[in-house]
Length: 279
Ligand SMILES: O=c1ccn([C@@H]2O[C@H](COP(=O)(O)O)[C@@H](O)[C@H]2O)c(=O)[nH]1
Image 1 (tube, rainbow, N blue to C red):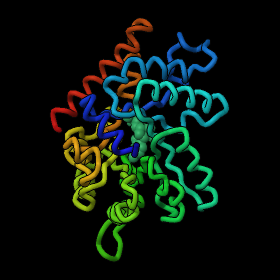
Image 2 (cartoon, helix red, strand yellow):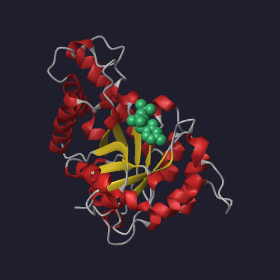
Image 3 (cartoon, rainbow, N blue to C red):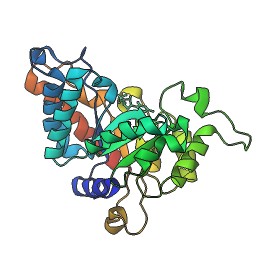
Image 4 (tube, rainbow, N blue to C red):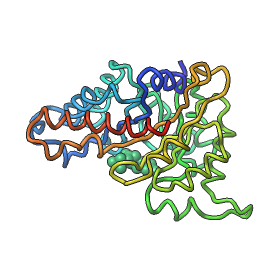
């Protein structure tokens, strides 16, 4: 099944567009997991147990797994999330010359979707784009302050670079597998991108710890996909709103292990409810 069909089914069945970010910062993993063989995996397993019913997807960021133990932790995490029937989107922001991207694209044998960097152009993304089954989210307007440095630069046509990226990405969507990353911290840009590309789903990071606009994330981040998709069949809009630290470390001041993970579950449920008020 294609990524966006699976996602539409998950969103509809579980009534949620929450992407739970799995960014197990080793400095913030609680003490009681420190002696575990793979603390990041032990942590993620408990987070998945606590949050999966509120999750439309899990989004591990590759930065938190890029060492020998990290990749083992990631594989265990992905298998466990799949066991709960939740798709996994790897926030890896990958791209390189085509020969190298072909290797990167093998990540899609493990995870269901990936974020990619458009800076090297279409050929650098071709091995991802040709994976009809996978979700390929192209960075358009990122949530960090420095997103203005290049992404807002005005082209000769008068449009900002991030809008051109969005338009190009929609042209690359031959297999219905392309989405965009647009941050919740810049709601005007979210709206502008949505006007440009009415039918691409967005992954919207930046709510929670970064203080982005949850209402704008839902209003502009979700869209119904064309006829022939699960989204159209079910009449459900597709898109994802991510929170990582705001969910997984919600229990940082909790008194015990159970309370720690219960707080993560509560945070995921509260975000689901908050987002659903705007759907
Ligand atoms: O524009 C972007 C693109 C990616 N991210 C990633 O999303 C999560 C956000 O984490 P929070 O703890 O909810 O702030 C993290 O993995 C980022 O690297 C982003 O924030 N903005």
